Image (cartoon, rainbow, N blue to C red; front, side):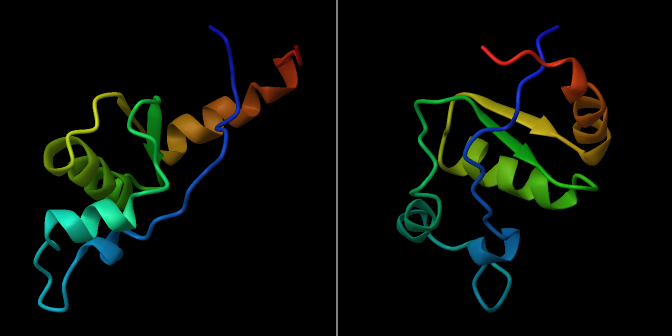
Length: 90
């Protein structure tokens, strides 16, 4: 398995996708919020517990139809971090 760093992280708070009444914003608003994320590239959605990342994954995958999504919790992040010492720079 090849270990890689997560490149160009974009921090989007999951509550930014909600209206004041906790309903999901409309698609045009969501596209504006997530505009920095290139849908033609592989995307890794991650957080510590998985709760925030799962919401981001839902919005990107089911609402905005981004095709290449991966989901990673802190357990996976910590495992990957512990293996960075074995990573070779190319």
